[in-house]
Length: 210
Image (cartoon, rainbow, N blue to C red; front, side, top):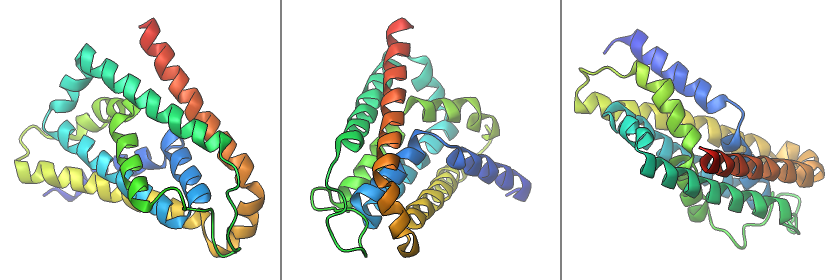
C-alpha cells in the first residue's frame, strides 16, 4: 500500500466530512434535541452510509447510479422527503429540555437505534453525497485495486466520517457547554431545521425543473 495514496484518500474524506452542510446540521440538531447517545448513533449511522458510498464508488457502481435517470430521480425524491421530515421535526419540536441540567434533550420518543437508522438513511439518500463521491472521490480510486483494497477504502471513509461526527456530537453535548446549549438550543435547532428544509426544497425544485 502506498502511504501517500492513503493519505490523499483520508484527506479528501476528512475535508468532505468537515464541510458545513446538511449532514453537520443533522448531527448538531439530533444531539441537542435528543441527547448525546442519539447524536453519537446518528453520526455512526451516517458513517456507515458514507462507507457504503465509498465502496460502491470503488467498484464503479456510483457512476451507474448517478447516470441512471430513474435511480437518480428516486434518490433525489427520497432524500428530499427525509430532509424535509427531519427539518420539520427540528423546527416545530417543543419541550426539549425537560430533564435535569446534566441531560441534553429528551430521548423519550426516539432511541439511539433510531438515530443510527436516521443517519444511515440520511447519508444513503442524499444526492449531494453521491455527487461528491462521483466528482471528487472517484478520481482517487485506482482501477487496479483488488476487492480487499476496495473494501478498505470504504472502511477508511466510514471511520473518518464517523470520528468527525461523533466528535461533533460529543462537543455540542459537553457538560461544560450545557448552559450555552440550553440557551441557544431553540435558535440552533430551528436554523438547522430550516437549512434542511431549504435543501429539500432545492432538491425537489431541481428535480422538477430538470
